[in-house]
Length: 260
Image 1 (tube, one colour):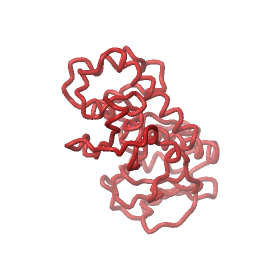
Image 2 (cartoon, rainbow, N blue to C red):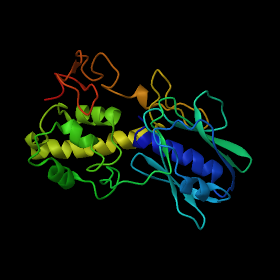
Image 3 (cartoon, helix red, strand yellow):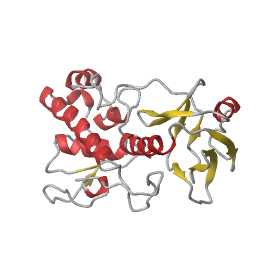
């Protein structure tokens, strides 16, 4: 699933390409979304001028002149492209003579969805070590699950939570409330750093190339991961282990040497 750095990469590309242009046509090409785009969202887009694109956590927001904003969520495998063909185009806009297409083979993406209540993002001033300690205090849930709970912290998913925990030296299955003050401080700093690096490198494009930016360009974060998708730790070379149970429905790799 695209996380904060991937969605921010999409936002920047679309904002630079389409800001100020007018949507001349809207087409639902394959109406097999997990949830069909609501009619009100489609009407808001038709004839609208794009003031720009913003982002909140993993949600992309099309800001429209004089009309309500329209929220996109890329789901598990969704992509927004300027042009480009795919058998899985679900939704298409014609903007200033160019096609903006929503591709989604797994159908969990959403167009015109409400923006839910979200916690602060690690790149915002509201997120700091004190906030993270408050989130973790007294919690028996795995620390990784708490990091990925968008109601608590917006933007982190499996890739970046895995990397942040490794950078902080914390095992993903530990109870959130078990972290000491120094560990929480390291983890807060690691969350900020891995997301900052992910944005700088244009997101992570894995072997399946499920993420490319709207112009078809891959990210480079996958070149810098220390744990995610690897067999051995990128720091010490030790074989990686998996937690005994999935966390947030995902496998959770860690280094038994570097993470305590």
